[in-house]
Amino acid sequence: MKTVIIGGVAASAACAMTRRMLVAMVIALLASAMHPHQGSSKERAEGDGKALFQAKCSPCHTIGGGRLVGPDLKGVTARRDRGWLERFISAPDKVLASGDPVAARLFQESNKVPMPNLGLGQDQVNVLLNYLSAPEGISPSKAEPPASPVQEEGDPSRGEKFFTGALPFAQGGTPCIACHQVAGIPPLGGGALGPDLTTIVATFGDTALSSALATLPFPTMKPIFGDHPLTRGEQGDLLAFFRKVAPRPPVTATTRIALWAGGGFLVLLLLTGALGRRRLGSVRGTLVDEANRAGR
Image (tube, rainbow, N blue to C red):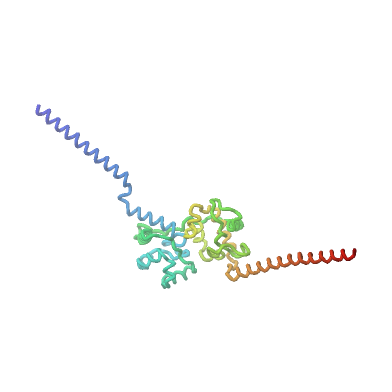
């Protein structure tokens, strides 16, 4: 009888232990499902930094791949004070306007293309700087290529039509001429919100410009093209068009005023001529009528 009782107790204890093990396994599985990346926060942070760099920085910068529009950012966290980098990345326009000598030198070295204000929050700035300061061999250990550069040759005539809006963009983007101008198209110029794009190839270079057309990372363009990206063909056509117009002198404010003044004078001259002919015809008709009445 005692043996049976002892055996029953042993069996009961074994069952209880089995149940506890099963419960622990279920809890562990649930925790793993709820927090799949709990043990990889470092890798996740590096991934966020890389994605941020590709989206915001790669059109103008590389990491170990040489200068594009802006400088190569390899080792930038060792060359510059962290506080200065945070201020400059957060509000480059304000730092440049303050007369900061480093920002002024970078502006000159970048063909006087100012770094745009990317609208990054402090957390994003920290993620980006942590990514840029990652040790060699972890990330970024290799040069980051520009994002999605244009590869195929485009058609400059189609590019001109995309620029002016004669051909609509496939994804519904706004024609370039709404905000930009290039020399001679149209004769009286385009929009003035954005910069003149006549010399954009010389300013950016083919590689950086093709990358910029692929991502359009500029703050004023993101809301317009964020959901309406350019197709690869449209990018190639626009790049070919910008290459074609590059030798032309850009449209200056003086040129624009002269064109508008000349156009206004021509319109005024035509109106004056038309009104003069109408008045002369009226006077002639009156004289003829009076002569006819006198002859009667």
